[in-house]
Length: 172
Image 1 (cartoon, rainbow, N blue to C red):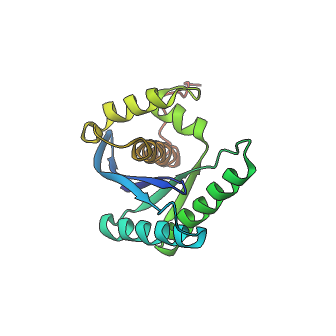
Image 2: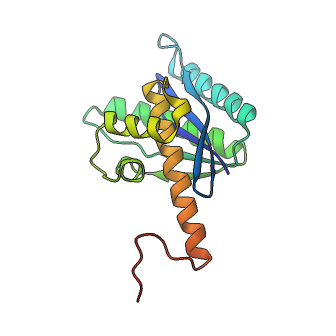
């Protein structure tokens, strides 16, 4: 399964594509779609949308995964981030992708084992799990973490659907 992870941002939206299979993860590509800071909001959102459509067309993912928005104290910043996130969701939906949405704590827990991991810990684990991503920008590393989270969640759901116990399940 090819997964596109997305870390929404108005200035820069991180993206990362991985290939996930039984017991393996492989880094395919990652990067950032940037919007021109001096442009009006509508133009910035359009730049993100067009950039993401190009990424989706180039890498043909089977699924997408997006980090949920963290609301911060600055309402204007939260609103702009929410608008960027809406564009990210729209680009994936317009491309026919099913989209998984994950809280930041869930992503951190899936990648590092703890929901309170620092950004540096997450980045270090992403680089360990995906050796091809050693030079990834911070936004791209965050997007790869979201893709890894989706791959783990999808694999666990598939095992449960087949009746195969997960590693944390206890024998009755």
